[in-house]
Amino acid sequence: MLNAIWLGLVLVSVVYAAFTGTMPAVTKAAFESAESAVSLVIKLSGFMIFMLGAMRVASDAGLLAAFARWLAPILRRLFPEVPPDHPAMGAMVMNMASNMLGLGNAATPFGLKAMVELNRLNPHPGVATNAMVLFLVLAATALHLMAPTGTMAVRAAAGSASPGAIWIPTLIATACSTLAGIAMVFALRGRARYAVRPQQDAPPVAPAAIGADGQETDAPPPAPPASAPRTALAAAIGIALLAAIAWQIASPWRGVPWRGRTSIDAMREIAESWLIPLLVTGLLLVGLCRGVRIYESMVAGAREALDVVVRIVPYLVVIMVAVGMLQGSGVLDLVIARLEPFTSAIGFPAAALPMALLRPLSGTGAFGVMAAILERHGPDSFVGMVASTLQGATDTTFYVLTLYCGSVGVRDMRHAVAACLIGDLAGFAGATAACHLFFG
Image (cartoon, rainbow, N blue to C red; front, side, top):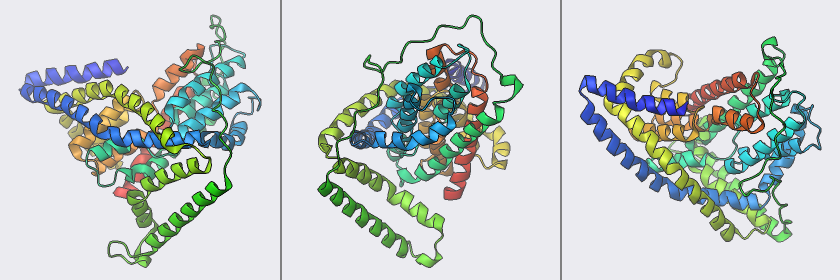
């Protein structure tokens, strides 16, 4: 699908330019977009490397394992047909915990293992069970609690005055997508259209899932024990920071007395100025409590982040050149002008529509489109805020469905696609509403 979309963008740009006389603009846009993409990667690398290094500190300190323990009782209620001590339950817990912490590279191996183990409980191989459908929706809508590091890095590189301002709107959007997806799973489960239909030529049960190192995927090693002096020091720092936040909120802000401020004003102030420093400090304090060698762990996480940065360069260049050619030809402006009356009626900026259409198909493609939108409209414009929030509203739906179902030979996904797409729509609606609330 992405191949067809990318080829269509380029061909439509060239053909339209040939008939309208905008070919010089298309040529210029292609060169400028390629240069902008490489420059953008260079600018965002530093912040992304630093933040992923801080996440590695927290992961080494056992934050991932702690999230998994917190999630286990919830998943037992959502998946009553899966035995609590079955390997599938442990893999699903680790997958969700990794997604919540923004550790996508760790989430995928756990997700593949979960599908394999769920398939062992499948009485009809080739057809998704109820548990499989629900897990697919949870993986595709991917509730993220941590700050969208990559998006904030792009916003900072584009000159945003408050790169972290989209964190709370993104939380609202991703919560909407996950809750709507879960609701649709249970609403569609009993429909005759999505009933289980056994397949005669179903593939055999797949072997155990393996990770990137060729070994079977297991839970992370247990965290080192906490030290009382280190914990006391971290608690003292945390209390001091909370007191500082309370004092800042109660103090006059931009000439507005605290009694005249709304809760939205206070939340906006914290989102713009406090969230990123507090997040970094919190992650490092977790490592301090557990006695993690913080500097060494930061460097190890930074090395892994550098690999991520290198991997996204070709995707970013290719998609940004295609979008730049579309803009240079005039096609994008024409489409936006035609759709503006309809999208404005629901409060959604038409300029962000390419982002909404591409997000379920390709994460890297949508990342490039978001970067192009920020480059053109500005990172702190309303369109830029909506595009940034859409990036974290949901995961790459069709990639997740294809990868996870293909790993176990599931060809009948039943109501998984419908539930995931409804979740995507809810996430986009939540992103738009949250941006109106905070930035409108």
